[in-house]
Image 1 (tube, rainbow, N blue to C red):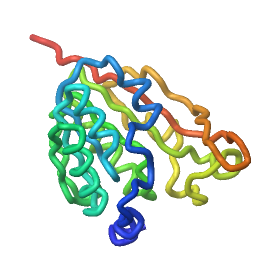
Image 2 (image 1 turned 135 degrees about the vertical axis):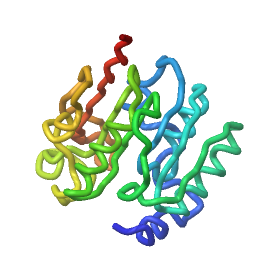
Image 3 (image 1 turned 90 degrees about the vertical axis):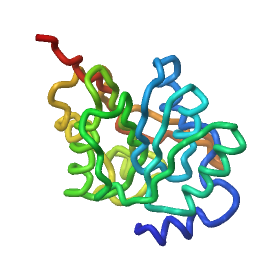
Image 4 (image 1 turned 120 degrees about the vertical axis):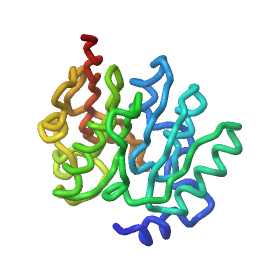
Length: 203
């Protein structure tokens, strides 16, 4: 889906997703010492806003201006500041080794763009920083619930970890995420990778 498609989807004043953070993001980033954070493909910016409430200095990047506008309103409601950048993550310049945390949460783009974004995002993590990816796993298309029906925009653990030279991969696997539906809870399957970049070595 292009930027206009996401603008159309986010055009309603109500949030498409909850105004709270993604549960997996909250679970694994709660208590992490805050620093600078880059939210790649931030959408309506709920994770970026939550990180800001935890003390992070956050930059949220997305090509949907409607999504970023919702983020601005939510930031004002929460009394926090976030830098909002209206750019396509496929061309956004991620400066290398700048961020204490780089987060990619449910960014849906096909290869080769996805692998390029993952590679550049990993390089943007500074030494001793964190890289986190949570996204629809390819197995979710046939074995899980919800999410895009197209495997080409979904992730795999092997592909995601392949960009992590110089990282200590702390978590890498497919996790189950409970989704409430009219017919009861269902399980979605997500790729989850959390990795710590090795500190720089003093000489």
